[in-house]
Image (cartoon, rainbow, N blue to C red; front, side, top):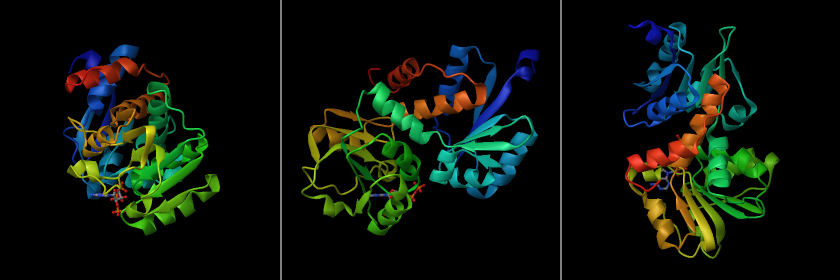
Length: 283
Ligand code: ATR
């Protein structure tokens, strides 16, 4: 090992599966851009191995971890102390070793989504009607910042309507949230539809009634794939003014994690453009 390599701070993403994660590429680009000496690996860690592997990583000198599917709730349990937004989400995607040896847990997903929607895509949330599809962990992570942005109307629709109802009740102190199943959406129309289901991961599309996207409405899939996801294709077919997948959110949540670890916020636009070029889309 060279002296320089020995001095680099170590970070990693834990997930299962994790081989196709873009996080090592993104953090390596951030490190080069900001002149930070660090290395960042993708490590396959199954849920049952998580606490032991995380303990081992930090005991071995690791400085910070990202945790992705299916480990975010376990990471929330693992953290010694947590941010308010992580407490709300009951999920942690960023763990940071503190000088006293304790581990801080945060959730940067919601902030990442909001930055992509409002700064990168120039969307206004205030006063708009917003539909969230799905009532799992991804939705938990974005409800607080979305409600803080002041939508006129927020509905969670889910395949299992009871889960949407429970989530709406849990976050009800932050603002008014309605809930329903997918078929109850017929006859309504929204300015912004966010897909936070896991359907894209298996190449599926939630069963959406037609006519639920307003003229000039926008669609956003929190998931991403090498090509357009089924929901992104649905949005284009529905005439969306803007229709994006979650690569911008991925880069922005990574930037917020990088800031927590390194105290410096990298420039995200060139990284999003490069990642898009690398997957064959114009940046
Ligand atoms: P996590 O908490 O890790 O996000 P999850 O609890 O399985 O995972 O949540 C995934 C979300 O995607 C849920 O809202 C799920 O709907 P159910 O609550 O009815 O299970 C939704 N989902 C997954 N596959 C879907 C599909 N093919 N069509 C529609 N919704 C789907």
